[in-house]
Image 1 (tube, rainbow, N blue to C red):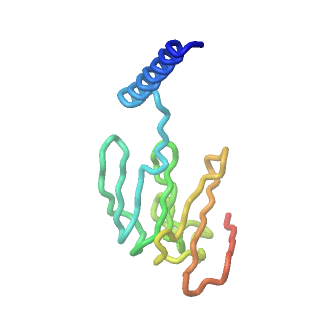
Image 2 (cartoon, rainbow, N blue to C red):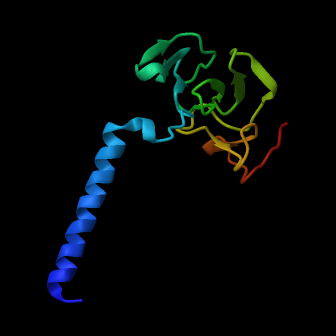
Length: 144
C-alpha cells in the first residue's frame, strides 16, 4: 500500500466517523437511551424530573439531607427508590422494608451509591460511606 492509498483510507475513515456522529446526534431515535437517572432527589424534599424532554421540579420527596444522596429509576425513567445513606424510600416516598439504619452518613459528600446488579432489572446494591470521624473500617451489610 503506497502513501497515497493510506491517505485516502484515513480520510474515508474520518468521514465515516463524522457521519456516524451526526446520525447519533440528529436522529436520537436510533439510540437506546436508558433513563435510570431521570429522577433526582436532593436537599430538603426537593427533586428534578427529566422525563418527557423537559425539566420538572418535584417537591414530594421524603429526603432531608445537606449533602449525600442517591436515586435510581428504571429504564423507562420511573422512580424506583432513593436514599441518603441511612434510609431508603420507595417510589411512593415510604421507607422500604429493611430500608432504615443503613451505615451511611448523610453528611458524607456521596453517602450512598446505587448500582444495578448486572443482567437484572430487579436487584440493586447500595454502597454506603460511614462517618469519617467514627470510622470503624470496611463494613458490609445485606438487606433483602
